[in-house]
Amino acid sequence: MNHMNSMGEMKRRRLRPFALILLVLAWNAYSQITVAVAANVQFAMEELKTEFKKSTGIDVKTSYGASGSFCTQIKNGAPFDVFISADMDFPDSLYKWGFAKEKPKPYAYGKLVLWTLKDFDLDKGLSVLSDSGVAKIALPDPKRAPYGREAAKAMKKSGLYDKIESKLVYGENISQVSQYILTGNVDIGFNAKSIVLAGEVAGKGKWKEVDSTLYDKIAQGAVICKYGLENNPSLSQRFYEFLFSDSAHAIFLRYGYVLP
Figure 1 (cartoon, rainbow, N blue to C red):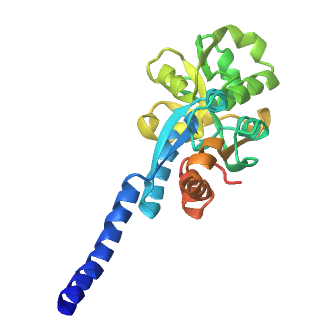
Figure 2: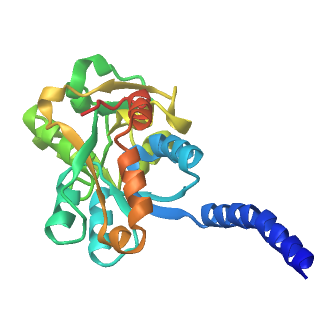
């Protein structure tokens, strides 16, 4: 009996590490957070997801869109763990309304560009928008997309807005503006530097940074949402902290962002 008991105990001891490995594998398989991401971050985000998964085993499920739209969705109960915005105002609004864990802090600063597939002289700066050959100018909806808001400011500050307002075509977000330009539905458009450097857009047409004195600094902030705090606090915190790591900073730099 003693021999049999000791044999059984030995088997159990051998099985325990095995069971632990299976448990870890199972945990990793179901470790996932859901993140709402401003459209301008989409290409950088794909790299961020890969790097984060490689170092933690945690999957990141993403939705891309306009920051203002996500802000409204989160206030209405959308199940996002983390919100990566194109500005500070929308995540700050979530914090003030009790839908975020703490005040947002900037993970990067964005750059506004003019982008076209046509042969316009972008060295002229924003004055190129008043050329007779420019019939349609795309920008993201200023009410929902911070890059659209700053594009409108730049046009107003340069004294062009009233002259070219009839040419303006609004996209819901940066991604839609990119499609307008790529399909030729508009002649030129405002976009994010992070978009024109990557993906299907890279190398197509020509772009130039908008004079940064014409618009406010685009500080982009992130927050852990109330949903993440209540349902995935540990995973959400790990991903949030990763956004401010050296690894994430290196990725942001490659996509044309400026670090805080």
